[in-house]
Amino acid sequence: MIYKNYPMVSRVVFGRGSFNQLDEILSPKRKGRNAPFIFYVDDVFKGNHWLTSRITLSYKDKIIYIPTKEEPKTDQIDQLVEDIILEYSELPSGIIGIGGGIVLDTAKAVSLMLTNKGESKDYQGWDLVKNPAIYHVGIPTLSGTGAEVSRTTILTGPVRKLGINSDYTPFDQVILDPELTKDVPKDQWFYTGMDCFIHCVESLTGTYLNAFSQSYGEKAYELCKEIFLEDTLTKEEAQDKLMMASWHGGMSIAYSQVGVAHAMSYGLGYLLGVKHGIGNCIVFDHLEEYYPEGVAIFKQMKAKHNIELPQGICANLAPDEFDKMIDVALSLEPLWENAIGKNWKNIITREKLLELYKKM
Image 1 (cartoon, rainbow, N blue to C red):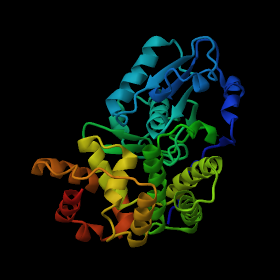
Image 2 (tube, rainbow, N blue to C red):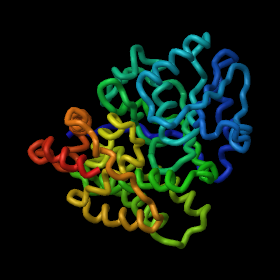
Image 3 (cartoon, helix red, strand yellow):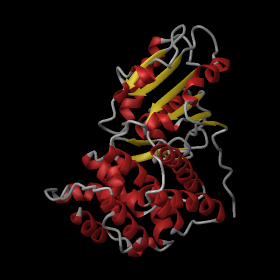
């Protein structure tokens, strides 16, 4: 057995208001006047003085607002990289992502592609990246995706939706400031929180499970139940705990894998552009067969928070469109092996996936 030597985020600050320390964290990393810090900020914060006034720009530093209607695409990453190369004479001192999973993944992908030749679509997969990324910092403003701690950046490419999974992907520095999540709309809060809950269910019931993943997964699972089912927490406590659940949920995947919901949700994302959190919820709602206990708890949480999931999103799809989604889902082999076991190909047939997608 060869064990993977996984990288972790080497530095993390946690605490309400810790975002105020951004400047002192970054300044020792500045490489000179011509090596800027590039801040990718979720465009929901455009004109939000409360957040943007705390980003200090010096020399050639720049804020770029990232639209989050759609998840990051490989050609979008390539364009951002090209913009930096054309505009600056030196590589940036660092890339800082401030936002939800989309923005964090964008920051990770750009920091990798600045030091690796070619196009980002060529790196979709496992351990294809050759050179370390430039310094990159993650500051989540949403809790649940685990993007702040994972070794992947999920991109939709011309052929597939698949992450750049590599040892060079994780952030060098993360700032966890629960205060930054205070204005998240309720449905978004729920879908992203459920991304974390589903990470845990898939990790804890998978064949890849080991004590490392289990210890993180169980903690995040407990936190999610406390946040979404009990009425014992203040708003601030719930924000703090969901941020930690996201971290632990992301860590629980490091030595294991996700499963059926993520694999099928990638299909929805690739074909229909359904965002990851809500896509996971739409799929998970129909997976009693694989995760009976997890789905039952999920349905309780959904009822408690009056969440209505979109119905019938696959109702009018043509056979070739179903085929595309099934192709994407089936290409995620490690996820199926974790969910079902080594003989998954005998169990998870195209017909089975078609039947499930038709329910959504």
